Length: 222
Image (cartoon, rainbow, N blue to C red; front, side):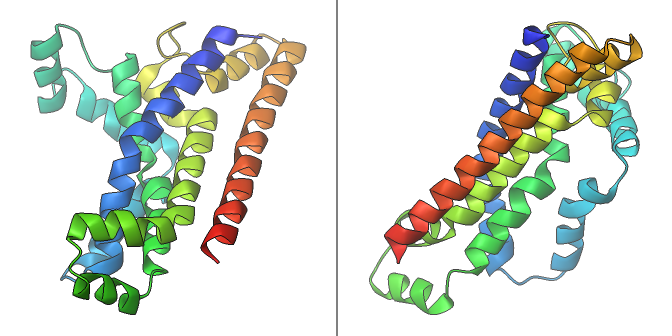
């Protein structure tokens, strides 16, 4: 069992969730409530990582983060090392390819909050921030929670983009998915089976915990 790779995957998934939680709330709410020209295009762009092959998206991210790109050059000048094949580059790629999983469920959660209830909160003199915190977010929270769980689980199992952007550097970019692939390539079926079982158990436990929390929250709100 490669515990270093598992810890790296958990750390990557955790930081991805931390970064995308406020993004999912703000963008999910914006797309749920606002009507504007080009909204369909914006939603399509958010969903694009979901339908693109991971190697295609990984290639474009590799080019975008490379030393010859503006982003890669800026990173090199600021921190003195390249962005690709580092944990920071892997985290940035993880945030981008998890946008559909983070935003769409949150958007659906905010869409379920009735307009009459939001209008009533405004008539009571609530500020937009207070209305979000006290009225909208508690009702939309199951969608936001689903978004975060999907993001976490998807990050744990992602392979193509991780390999393209991060490579397989032990302790830096070698995640559990890459470690499983390496074990299979080395004909270590027992090691691959053990790590796969651990990954399945973590993912299943995470999803089960989400269902339990959503059900409990639903009973409180009813």
